Each structure stands twice: as C-alpha cells, then as structure tokens.
Length: 118
Image 1 (cartoon, rainbow, N blue to C red):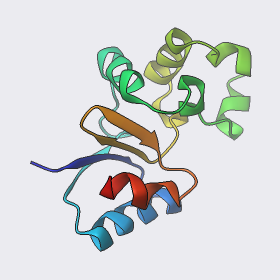
Image 2: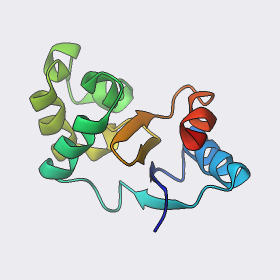
Image 3: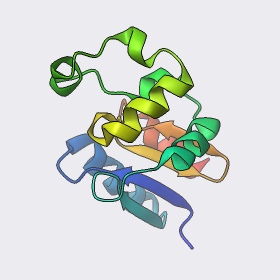
C-alpha cells in the first residue's frame, strides 16, 4: 500500500513535479487522476477533514471558474466547496497530497518534499 496518495492532473506541471519529488524521496505513491475518477461528495468531505489548508483554497480561481460565473462567495464554506467540486471537478486545485490523516495542496511546489518525508 502506498504511503501517499496524489490527486493528479497529468497536464499540470506542478502536479508532475509532485510525482517527481515523491520519486526522488523514494516515497511510494498511489496516483489518482481526479479528472478521470472524480471524488464524490463523501470523498471530498473526507479530504476536507484532512486538509491543512483552508477549504476554499481547494478551488482553483482560473478561467473556468470565471466562465462559470463563480465568485469567492460561491466557495466560502466547506459545503459550498463540496457542491462546486462535485459539479465541476476540473476546478479542484492540484496536486493534492494525502498521507494518513493529513492532506495538503501541493502549491507552491516547495511544500511537497517536507510533506512527503514528514
């Protein structure tokens, strides 16, 4: 069983860097392509319960966010974050690393090595 799960988008350079950091640290990872296999409501709530970052940080504020007409007020609470990400998994920040009862968003990249080896 892998020590770390990485919620990964193979098109994201930061997500690829997290995989490289795990490889360099010799940490076995379970890679979950969250766009292919999105988290359901229960999975997102479990993730938020482990996340060391604010729940709202799990939502990317990018062109898709704006195109959908979303604002910060739409993702201000954990319940809102779950609702938005169930409907639009492409808005999930990446990578997300999960280790036991802890999880972080792997941005900036320099957060990843310390999390992997803690």
